[in-house]
Image 1 (tube, rainbow, N blue to C red):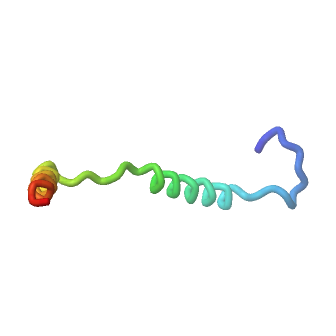
Image 2: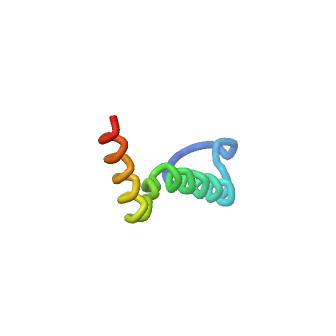
Length: 57
């Protein structure tokens, strides 16, 4: 935080800063991770089941 004027009690050390950055990065990766897709064959089977279920009602 170069250029900011703060007393020593408001500053954090490099190790703490790095830990915070890594934790934020991990949470961002988890929340921004794309939804896992099913294999194409499984999606086709599910689609067929939905179609057949709709035909029976």
